[in-house]
Image (cartoon, rainbow, N blue to C red; front, side, top):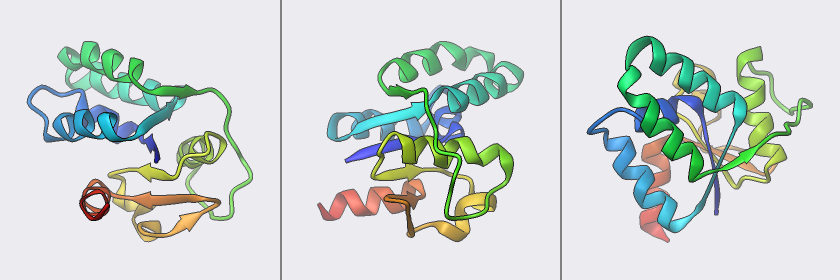
Length: 132
């Protein structure tokens, strides 16, 4: 299982006492996690503005992930421009899953597999892992 982490997942996991951090710690023991430089930079920017104490945790988390430098820009679905590097990175990195909390832009795709990548919320992935 190869799980691509969206910026909002990284942001949440970098905050102290985060349930997302606990979830990702367990996930990293069971799966390969990957992300894109774009997602790390977006999380870094948001943390610097809102929770700068989480920057160190973000760097540690990013260091545990495979960083994808390429992305696919030809996608089978329409997304806001800011989300193309997220799904495009997941596709280029041959992820099996894209883990995102972005319900506004990705919620309509949750549970669907697009170009080999199943788009899931944290709850959906936790339920899927319980079954396996």
